[in-house]
Length: 213
Image (cartoon, rainbow, N blue to C red; front, top):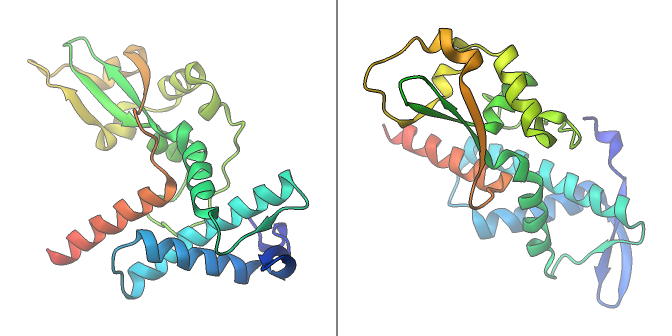
């Protein structure tokens, strides 16, 4: 996603008037507000990674608001953050699900749909600051039957074994690789959606734990 898809300026509420300010400057201001309220104390590279990931989400949020309403103006000191969080929750809803796979021994294994989507789209999950273009109409996100069929036909057990969380423990280990394609699969939505910002924060906490080790 290139920088020129974003507007150069955006309208901002200032007292009782509206003025146009540089788009990138406004995004940076909103990002600092988000991080100051929601992030733990980060330093150096950790804060940079968190900032870069968050500013991408802010840019997409503002771009979406302007496209929906050409007269939109952001109130830097208003309740914009609540609206942003709701936007994030809706955006992350297709990823807030697990695919459950059952094998002949009665064992069940869980896979996060965001991990499966990343495999399908060759997303570099090792780079948290990479800007990822997500097509909201991608059938992997909109059609659960399509997703289940796609992973059966295009992924092997070896491809995703390391992503699996065991839900039910088997008595005797079967041939998972042999059963994978025809194993029963279903999608289960999470009780609560997880925003992209929360995912970033969780990843950052894991990095802190690794540093302590």
